Length: 527
Image 1 (tube, one colour):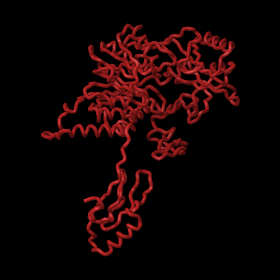
Image 2: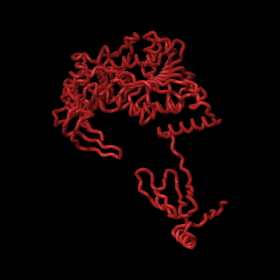
Image 3: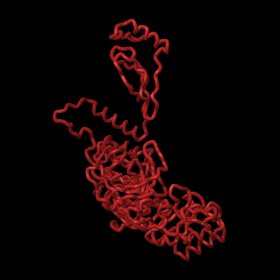
Image 4: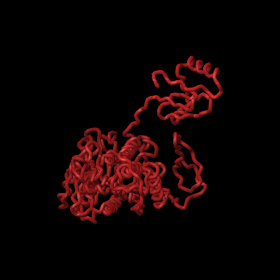
C-alpha cells in the first residue's frame, strides 16, 4: 500500500481511494506518531497543487527514499547490484525550477483567469498566488500573468504558458489557439517593457514559436567548470534544475573519463549539454540526436565555443549505432522510456565503458540488467541526484557506470578445471538475450502445441496440458481432472480425450483389471 501524506516509520490512519491488483493507494487522514524527518510545508498551496508532493519531508528524508527506490529497482527489475553507491548529489530546494509549463483557464466562479499547475489527481487548475519552487522573479509574475491573460481578446483560448529561465533572461511562451488582435499585441509589448521578460508567441505547434518582444531573443546557460556557454530556445529540451545539471555534467565526465584520441558517442545529445564538456577533455566526440533542430543548435554551440565536435541526426531506436562506426566509450541520456533496444543491439567488442544518465529508475534498472546479464558488463557504480526536489514520482537523475570484460571468451570458468561444452556458451547467451527481450515486452513467447503428460502406468493421469499450466494435484491410481490456470484465472477442467464416452469406456476397462492398474496401450499411429 502506498500512503500519501505519510512518511516511513509513522503510524497513520488512512483512507483507501484506489485499489489495484498488486497494491492500493491511500491518503493519511491523521498521524499518530510523527517521523523525525517531518516538517511544515513551505508552500501555502501544498496539498492542493499537484506540482509538489513531499514538501512535508525534509531533504535528507526525500533523498534517502529515492536512493532506496533506485536500489529496489536494480534488485527487483534488473536483478543487479551496483558495486559502489555514489554520494547523493544535493542542490537548492527552492527556486530551482528553471523550466515549467503553467496551465491557464478562465473560471468565472473563481473570479477570472487562473494560472498555475493542476490540482492533485485532477484536471482543475490550482488557484496559485505564488510558487516557491520557481525562481522568485518568476513566482512574483503569477498575479500579473492572470491580469495579462484576462485583458486579452482570446482569454478563453490561451491554454498554457511555458516558462524558460536562462542565465541572462526569462522567456514566456504564450500558446494561443486563435489569432491575436492589435490590442493583444500591445498588451504583450507593454508586459515585456514593464517586467523585462522575453515574450514568445506560439500559434500552433512547437516549431511555430517565435520571439515577439524583443524581436531577437537569445537565452543561454553556462557550465563554468568547462568554460562553456550554451544557447537555447525556450521550446528546446534543457534540464529543469540548472545548478544540479552543472554537478551532473561534472560527475558524468569524471565517470566516463575521456582521454585524448578516444572516440566517444553521446546518444540523445540535445544541444550538447554533455558532448561539449567531453570534447573539452580532448576526446573525439560524436553527438547523435533525433531532432534536426537540436542538432543544428548543438553545432552552433560548438562553433561559438570553439569546440571541435561532430553532431548528426539519427533515429537511434530504428538504426542503432552501426552506421557510425566503433566507439570506445558511450554516454546515454535517453528519454523516460529508456534505451533497451540500443543496449541490446550493442556489438560484442565495444564500447569498453558506458555512463547512463536517466530520470526513471525503472527503465534504468531494466537497461542495466540487459547490459550486465546479456552484454557482459559489470555495474560499477550508481547514484542519485536531487534534480526534482519535493516530487513523489520517478523524476530524478541517476548515474551508472558499466565497465568490464565484454567478450565471453575473456571470462574464466567459475570453477577451476571446469569443462566448457562447445556451443553451450552461445546457447546460454541466446537464452539470456531472449529472456531480457521478453521482460522488456519486445518478444512474445511462442505458443507450444498441446502435449500429453504421462505419469507412471496409469492412463487416467494422461491429461492434455498447454504451456504455462501446472498440475493441481496428482494421486496414485486417481484420475487427474483439474489443473491450475495462469495467475488470476480460475481452475478449469480438461475434457477427457474422446469425450464422456471415452471416459466411461476407460472406467469399464479399468474395473476389470487388477488394482495395480492396467498397462499403458500405445496411442494410435505411434509406436
